[in-house]
Image (cartoon, rainbow, N blue to C red; front, top):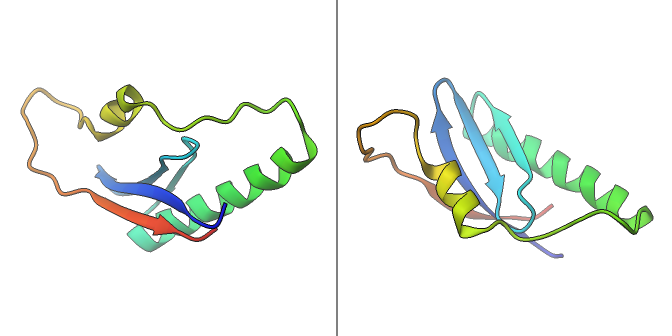
Length: 88
């Protein structure tokens, strides 16, 4: 795959980057660190996936995306999320 789609969100003191094509997650103190960790995780996953035939891959479901975007707590949030293409 040439690129992956990810969503970034702030979770307490960290940024979390979620890949929509496979559900892999990266986390960091900054957005850039979270993206870099996600790229590393995708590269590692892709390397193993090439050698192992029985690894399950599937795009994230809408339900899983909703869970990721739902912020802890009862009150609705006005938080901003970012959607980006990541070249891994």
